[in-house]
Image 1 (tube, rainbow, N blue to C red):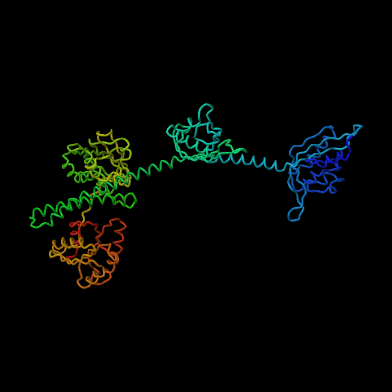
Image 2 (cartoon, rainbow, N blue to C red; image 1 turned 135 degrees about the vertical axis):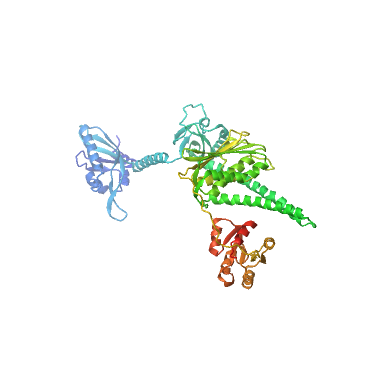
Length: 638
């Protein structure tokens, strides 16, 4: 027979907390083993002989502490039934001394089994109560549940698609995210066959294989098929989950929709390509007039030129300079309009007058190409509200565009009508037409049809962009249509109709007398020697007395001595710009009342405002048109 000492040794060395309780409501602790003493942080003499519920009282400040009540019921069931009773993981805080030395309670969880111990006569001797501290297990399970809740909340809240994949990526185990295909139930199909367009599958296979071999992160941008059948772009990143042996047991990843970014990148690439084409075209267009100008300059340097040849040569230079000026004006116009820096000088107008002026502008080109232009406008008024100069520019640009892209001898048609409270103007041609994709972006900046290397049609692709911006500034719309290459084009401008007919403009009277026939004294200030010299020669040829200076300080000194009636000042001068020079000229008595004219390459509205603030009377943009300059001089008092 085994000795009592052996039983006591087994009891004390058990890895599970164990104590014996009296089968009474007080549950007196009769014995307790070392494992429970270690778990509870108590000494044997503190527990043996005391009630379990006195040794481990409930926390009166914790309404959720039901541990004592649950344990009392469990022990009562053992006494009543004579059968063991098991408690699952039970929250039972125990009294402890807190780090600050104050008494308190520490939250603990225990699983317990209460077993009746009977005497030889069958009477209930005591209750064997075993406890196992499962606090860490309970907390881990709670953390796991919380983590799962957070994961679900994250996958529901995020715009990304979250997925789990089998180790070899052959099967999609889980997919969370709206807008994409659901899991395939066909185990024989590779998941990529369902989700990825064919053109990206080989690249994805290779990236997956590399990630599996290296047990490394998978990362790739690729196309993906959506639930609605459309194809978008996604950035996918997945990490391998390794088991205890270091082998991949699954992949967890997320995919972000980057379709908008990809479309924006493509649009930027297309814009960059069109910009490069435009710059190449601009260089070509600017070189074209430079060639005859250079040839004319060389010709003028030759001796013994007759008057007819000089006149012809100067006409060539004048035409080419006008062409270059037109190109530059188009560029500046587009810049001003697209940045919202154009202010309309609105008035009540009749669209018929606008049509007449636009046709007058384009007829030289139409005649030169041997084309026929039919104009169809009604006899009654077509009232609109707008800036006459800008609306003429709109129709002239459309007619010029039609003439350029219509073969010689072709036919153009302009038709204006009142329709549904609006004024519409159609410009139709039987020219080269457009493919649908070009018609869709005809009004985009720099958009042009493909042309041969000779650039026979000319232009920079700015005209239609300018037309669209100006029409929209007037509250209207412009559209483009074509039945395809070789089948002509139709542009339609629609403007709001003004209820009242246009009032006749009041005649303007210039109250200032013209300058005397003998010319006036003019000082030209420009650090560009050639520019100053040629302008001086033109003015002298017109009968004016001209002095030339290239330095601002010298110009101020000479102005005090000779008191010119007109000062033509370049803005980009060394040391002192034209604005500052103008302020000095206004400040000194000798030139305070002189006519100050800014001669500059800058023609923005902001530049004109700066000139006005500096004291200039006029602002002229290079190259100077002699007639415009003469008109400015004609405004001088006689």
